[in-house]
Image 1 (cartoon, chains in turn cyan, green):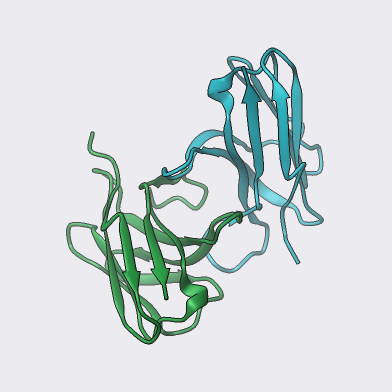
Image 2 (cartoon, rainbow over the protein chains, first blue to last red):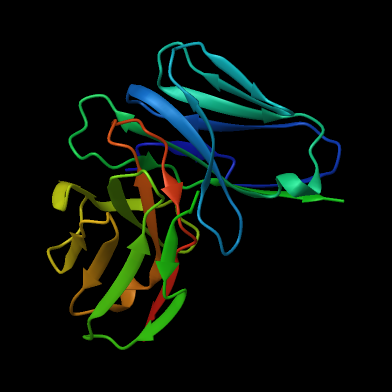
Length: 113
Length: 113
């Protein structure tokens, strides 16, 4: 059973379109982090959301943490080819034992010119 | 600021052999963690080291072991390699606080034949 479910698994859209990807769980998380990973590279942190209901903006990217801290979304406005990559959400579930981050399987995003 | 570096970048081993992967952490970071990323999946937590001691472990068998050195660099050792061990192995350094963001290296791609 995957603790963090990401959807969609794959998304291919045209440059200039808007999109939203989701990260859902039945568990409560102390915070959630979003990473982007490009082929041949390690994941790079985009943002950390900590407070339920929090919204953070990073240029054309908007991140939201659910009120109950069980889910998060990433919205991209006017997508560009440079946004192409694997988007991963990750966090520590409350009461979780190990110190490592739990990752979702990711959303593979392709922005076509 | 020096980032996280991993070596080697690629490695091919035969089933039953042993492998050692190396990681130099980002300057100022005293915690190192290792993740396994199978093709098409999100990273899975293997273990974490702080002050040369393992202080968190994911669901991996004892044949996965590690070391952290006084300069905070680290090694991941895998004994008795199995075909399913083929994956990208990622090292990440961070501060000590639980929700500190991870700074990943570009990984070592291990292929077991």
